[in-house]
Length: 364
Length: 275
Image (cartoon, rainbow over all chains, first blue to last red; front, side, top):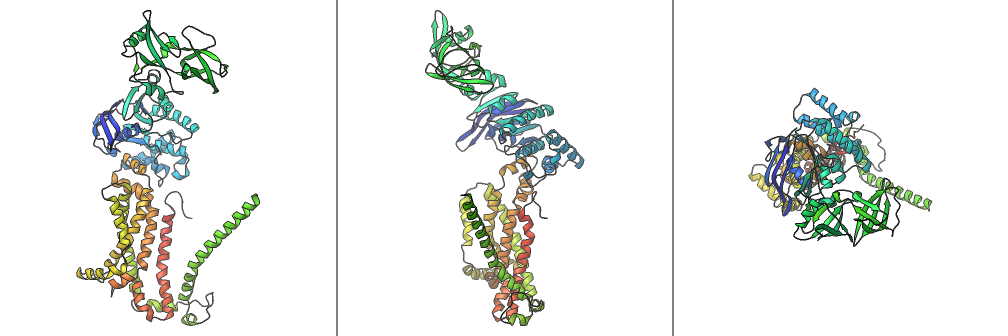
């Protein structure tokens, strides 16, 4: 297992800048997720690292070796494809053994490794079957077994769970995480599903339009998004963003938002007062908004629009001033459309966005 | 309401089966008669009216045919030419189809049209100049020249079939092969080719039969080393009726045998075996 280093890589397709000036380092044994919407360049980046695409500029290092000009077979990688790419004309055994056979490993070693990989993926009884006789989930296991059977330095995965049905995806996600922890693989995983990214990754690289916007742990990406886009992309429901105006009243920084005033802590206030333009976006997640039945200082008045009982909690859509916000409440919280409620935003969990640039601001 | 659609579907089904049987009969009945006649003695063939079922089985007609001058030689020539055509057109056609399926290169569309346009050439016009050219190159009356012409005739459809066959093989499979240790050639031979085999088998049948049945160019391009259709074309008008039936049977048999051979590959290579 080894480190992946991507330095200033560019890849264009005609006029489209698929990957533009990307730098990325995946540490040994780390599980890094490339997350982003369709067309953001995550798959292209993965394919460049695999050697399936030639980079236009920049360098790629796998395990301290410059592999930029090497074909995939010389890079010591293993890959799991989105549609599994399991060879239909070979048995499951031969599929899993494929990489080992190409390395000319002796027969008994091939058998041993295939058996071990099959056991890890629970497909030992399927070894004599052909892929056409397997379900989608089973084929996916074959694809993963094929990847871990060889001694690759690095494991690359291109949305391997996206073709599974929802329940199977949930199961496989946990199994995959346990498996990869057990074999301690350096893994680079591509997905557009932010729940998958948050649950699987040691670190997440959020990509958009060919560039990495933020590269941090799931908790930091969730709590402290780098900009407006990431805050709205991660989390279900997406982060609420309210228009806010920064004012100074009696020497204290006050933000006027949602028809009321909120009082940021002093370090945040100092940061906000330094802004060129006093327009901000107040970003707050649904679970960080407290609902109160009566007016309270620092709480904003809102009107209930829709109540969605989701079983474990209620999701309430409210009209706050000119904007709508989504709020999480406990499951037994009773609310009626048209009812007035007061919302207290957890001031420490607010993500302050500079409206002009869309960037998030954090006090030093 | 349910009953109405059920009987309507039943009628539709019956009609479809009837149609299939009719088409099959259209092809099988002449084959049947030829086969029966080929195995009947001379006087039965000359008799009238003919009975549907074979009266006597005799190898007389067939033996008469085989022992006729040059027949076995021409038969063997036909086989040689057809196999040569098959091999050469696959060796050229498979990579050509692969290139069309996988790569984008300048002139690709022009190339495609050019391939198809060779088919548009009437063989009648081509064969005389070809005969002259072959004479100049000292290739006249050689089996290889007939095979080359057949290759030129078969190649357009072969490439059409192989290119669509390779387009049906997912590119991801070859990419997976390269990740797990293959270079591009190995990815082709170990993954793309085995998966393309049924389609290639189909075009093999077509090419073999095209070459086997081709009579016009073969007649013009050969004198001594004739293929069987060419031989028969030249001699048939003057031959007795039993000879013709036997000849028909002989032309028929190898193509059918070849098809039975290829059939297994046609059905599939993965997981579905013939009992």
